[in-house]
Figure (cartoon, rainbow, N blue to C red):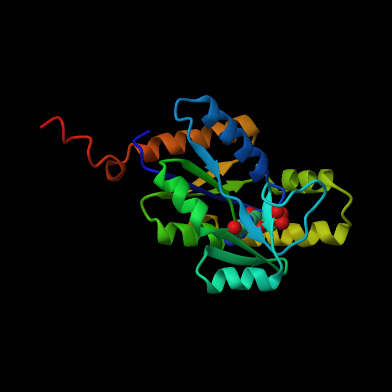
Length: 206
Ligand code: 5GP
């Protein structure tokens, strides 16, 4: 680790397993030498699900509170997904980047592209693909009790999103969590070797 923070912006269709893969990446980075990994906790106006707690999975806000955060410049980027706002609070991300952490984001397509615009050298965009549409459908059906029309709407949405995969720098297929985790760890390693992230590497040599 060269002391410079890194943003890992991960997008992909609903059901592709972004959350599980990012948990595995986070666990591997915590065990590894870097020891410095962070997760961006987003603000959202959607209601908490199940056991979700404020400040853990999300900061849960009212629409008015969220709009005030935007107006006050406290949100780096935000998007609307299924009628709710989702956004990245600026202060914690800037602090983690300043501390040289690898910061993991599970974020919409527009969110990933926005982070890349703001941090061109210090953000990496990764799109997670399913092994096949049949597999994605199986995963979406296995996830819960949703009706057929909801599953079909998600599959249609997933196809639309997959057509935008080429706007990302890296594509990772989630054949297995371990494989996708290792691919993302390899991307992090390679990105940190870019010359733009090692500007002082030659200074002591010549
Ligand atoms: P969910 O409601 O399932 O937790 O998340 C819905 C979507 O919002 C997911 O695609 C997730 O990646 C995205 N999302 C979560 N936080 C943010 C954020 O801060 N910014 C953006 N742009 N998208 C987010």
